[in-house]
Length: 343
Ligand code: F6P
Image (cartoon, rainbow, N blue to C red):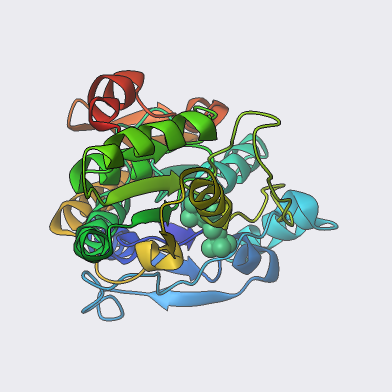
């Protein structure tokens, strides 16, 4: 079989581990030829490929990023994009295409599947917001990086008796904020799923600080939004999938906290640090399991399916179900656990 492979959307630690696993089992077990498309759907549109074999994949298991490169190119937003994609897949004689990506990349895979392309999906999103899978690789690494950062911020916050606002990734879902906030002992966590009341946040901080010197950590997901009309917001530019480029809500939150409470407040935006570097052992193992399951699915002709984790087991689910709606933060985890430690 000739199996194509691409990584699309924002990168995350563990992509290389998936690629390595697909290549290893494909080449050694099935005798496949593996074709890597560069930079996500852009490589398919431009027929930009690289040879993938076991030798090329040596040493990549612990490396973050993706040796294939990635982009947020959407063939459905490019003139003749679908025709170009189908032509190059035909030219490369691709029997199966393994697309590693989030809702955008897999949304395109799903549509190309309807055009007759044999696609298999591998879920990838640092935000952990893809449905039908309990977890995606890269998320554990991001939570670890964010909670390590929060630990460091605690000590400097304590020395100065300050409020520290920490902005983490999470465009539509606050999984990183919630889990890193729980792990890091946050006094407040603001997530996209629940519009926040800045007055309530400030009152809680005042109560907390009234009891003595109490440095506070406020974790803010980049997509968090205040209740309408309660404080200033900003507008940002939009990408090919219609997503606003986020970043900066923490500055506004910090300004309001300082203004309303009088507490000295500082901001740390973790940004792409959360997506870089070496994956945790958990993510390497999950990514490896996904890679092996994906090449097996391709050989079973399980097209239009995405590999996923359910109850700790690797299963197959329709890509259409996974991209249908986002997986938002578990209410019990947020209200029943995280919120207990607020203020
Ligand atoms: O989609 C995942 C994500 O990490 C979001 O949390 C974040 O808003 C976005 O990607 C950042 O995208 P870029 O790498 O294009 O700046």
